[in-house]
Amino acid sequence: DAGVTQSPTHLIKTRGQQVTLRCSPKSGHDTVSWYQQALGQGPQFIFQYYEEEERQRGNFPDRFSGHQFPNYSSELNVNALLLGDSALYLCASSPVGGADEKLFFGSGTQLSVL
Amino acid sequence: AQSVTQPDIHITVSEGASLELRCNYSYGATPYLFWYVQSPGQGLQLLLKYFSGDTLVQGIKGFEAEFKRSQSSFNLRKPSVHWSDAAEYFCAVAPDISGGYNKLIFGAGTRLAVHP
Image 1 (cartoon, rainbow over the protein chains, first blue to last red):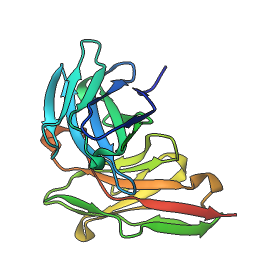
Image 2 (image 1 turned 120 degrees about the vertical axis):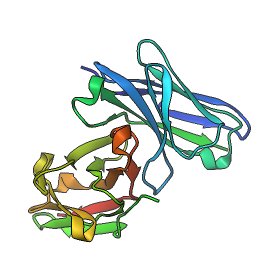
Image 3 (image 1 turned 45 degrees about the vertical axis):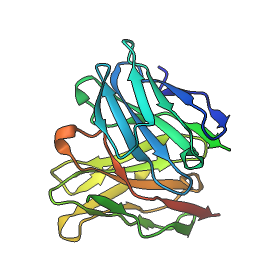
Image 4 (image 1 turned 180 degrees about the vertical axis):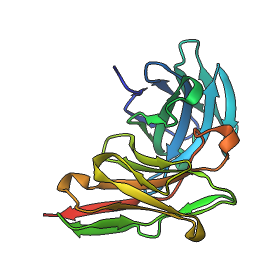
């Protein structure tokens, strides 16, 4: 049983570009959350998707947007990249009905903005 | 605003020694509390969680944590550290119980080094 998978593993972009990160949740999970982890910091919540809609959002600008597909996979899009967007982006999934009451995290996508 | 503080940025212990990692939170009610571990190149793995009930919770890999409401603390402990425990440890709180446990606030982390 595969866990949470994210692609790509690493990505290099330049300022002003746009980027799309992808996440496949753990089998049986229907809720996906995205986190940004800057170097030396703890993860920060970006947003959560459930039933293809954004349900909760952290303190991130509108440049950060997402999507969830019918198969529960998700994308994180960041427009007009800034140097400060360089970070590890983590995807987490949780099960239907929250029965397990915990998040399963992927290994992340390391984004570098030059 | 809700916050999580991990006062120790970096801790070094000898293999076999005991360990305590500190965590303080700022929140009005009793939140959901978590400890996660992150090894290099890997995602976060849940060690243990506290929602209610017994204030001493047992987790995986021999870790335990104690919730102390009076001190707003949720410290992580292990009686005997193994070299494989070297990693980054994060304390987290889910401040909005109505929103479930998907929106977590994390501390800045404590990096644990283990000497042989």
